[in-house]
Image 1: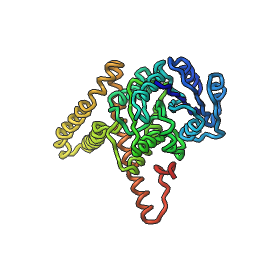
Image 2: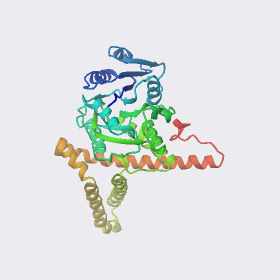
Image 3: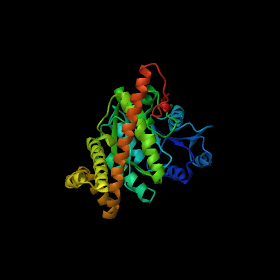
Image 4: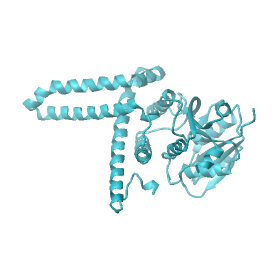
Length: 356
């Protein structure tokens, strides 16, 4: 079987010790990469100096331009048959590269693949464990046939990448540039697969503010705009039917809880008569949400025990709430932008401003 050359491409912005660990894990790979290209995206720390202590090709951007441009710059310099994109805050398993090579050799029609985070996140705080384990679970239970790409652990044939002209550089933040690339690949007829045994470890530490900012403004809202532009919503990964139904249930739960609290506050005879009915609705919605997502909670119970799982549940429901709210906001913004456009007017749409 002919050798498949693999080029690893890593965009980095102020990578710190996580970036060093990333490069060390590549050195420990059973199957060595044919080249490692690091694109230092306007970093103000010593990321480029860290990269130069390893066997890498270092490219530097004078200003921070976002991972889409950095990855494209690395891809343009790469010589490998396969471009393997890795984030600077993940580490490879020793067998990861070998599995990537094996999959492309086994499936000649395969154009791109993505992997998964493992079930042992690097940061130990609750939010980091929850978020990264939830990401792992989502990928592990999803279909292998997908229509999206993933820049943290995603490989693509160089000829395919060139044919679709790479990542859309109008995304200037770590955003959904990889998802958008996947949609274009699928639309053009290329085969993408999720391989669940190709895994990397995520080292990022999530805190409340950073998590909500990334989830809402860098994922949910721009993803909504992309879905509306593409006029498609595939039932895969985070967009599964159970997740969509959970969003409806969470909003119904929030509305019912609000009505119940207002009834208690005002204490009218009518509200007293309605109270048993409201409580019954609340209990039904709670049980429904628990049952719909029982597999998720069983997963967390198996991995981290009962106390961890009990803390996961409110965060998981909050995830449905802000995801649904962001989708509603994004849909409204997109509709307003379209209406203004149809009527020959201009409007600064916050959802689409990165795309203009």
